[in-house]
Length: 68
View (cartoon, rainbow, N blue to C red):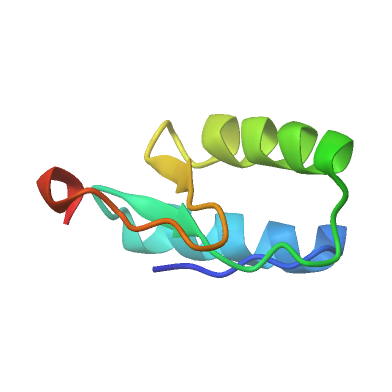
């Protein structure tokens, strides 16, 4: 699991980590500093940069058991 917060530098570190580890799935779980518009943009960017393995988990949601 890779965490990403609001700053671009942290997002870049998360992307670099996901690229190095090459997981089957990566989930964003820390986004309190990003508004809804920014969240959509950042999540799209992270998914593209992480090679399509990234999924955002909204507050209070669970990762489906089929993805664990």
